Amino acid sequence: MSSLQKKYDVTTVQSGKQAAAQAATVLPQAVIIDALSMSTNGDRIVRQVKNDIAGVPVFHLRPAGEGSSGADVVLTKPFTARKLINALERVFESQRPATRDERILRRGNFSLQQDRRILTAHGIETQLTPKLALLVDLFFQHPNETLDRSTLMQKVWNTDYIGDTRTLDVHIRWFRRAIEKNPARPVYLKTVRGIGYRFEPSADA
Image (tube, rainbow, N blue to C red; front, side):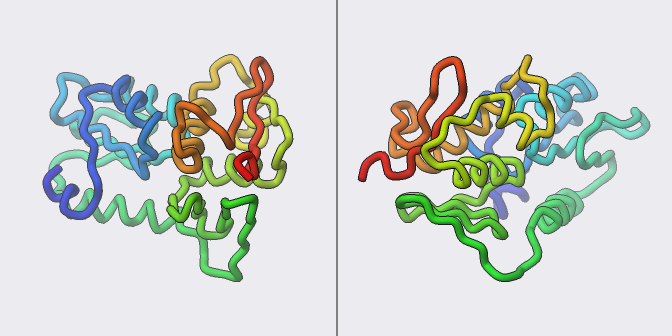
């Protein structure tokens, strides 16, 4: 991982559960499951991570000849650090929207560059994942309106199933970390108990 650390900010955890917990506070651009250093093939961890933080590309480093795990990218031995970095860059490039006329939504002191998926809050830019960009865009399109959890799941994840909304919870935390001065005491993205959430971009005006 030392080669990755020279190019990217890398956070290391020891389990899929820890990865999901860490991702709830830090918006990752990718998750790498290094099953080569574990006593497991990593398939269960890949499924857990993709379920808990859907929308973030998952890379699976695993022994050869063990089938498919459902990860976005699977690399088997032998491979080099350069091959992993090249795979990361290809995925990041594929997620980067084509350059065209800039479309910017402004709400209060916040702005969203829709094509580039960049959210600006309090002068700080945050690069959003594709799913988080869809979620943020939805709130920007409906400021000061309460959006229920089923609507958010349907519009962003194309599902009516709300039996397990951990992925939504994680994305809400990411949104709050980007816009709130104190995410533990949200001012702009309010929880409407038993229903959903309301984005109030001018709450401190």
